[in-house]
Image (cartoon, rainbow, N blue to C red; front, side, top):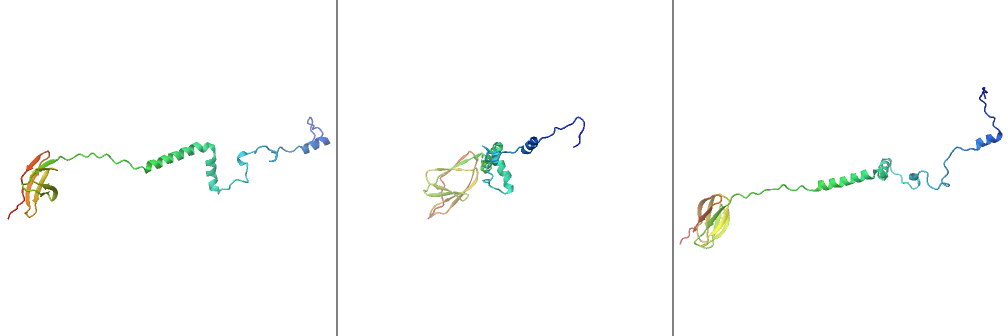
Length: 174
């Protein structure tokens, strides 16, 4: 040792040397003497399940308490999105405007006469007049009865108008 002026170290005696040698470095007490784990999240490393490295971050993110609210929001929003995307939109409202209608009143002197308008069957007519509701326009009326020849008549019916025909008969002869 280099002795300088004014800096003298006290001489160590045998007891002081032994104390210095005996004084251990600060250490954590061993597991047997501790009342609780030093790091509670790693209390039982032997029971810990080892996951592949790509799942470790996911597991940690799911188990941390600070992530509970964001994860809950993500799950709730995902559920809402799934419900909204699986719903079918309501069909657009269809406003049905009825076309203007015309009425046709027809009678026949012979019962059980069939009436056709533009080759569409309307019904049976007889001595009592029968009313039909049609779209306005031109129609070819055809009257048919058993054992008689068909009779054709052209008529034009306007919107809001009631046209009365009768009695009209098919051509029947002996």
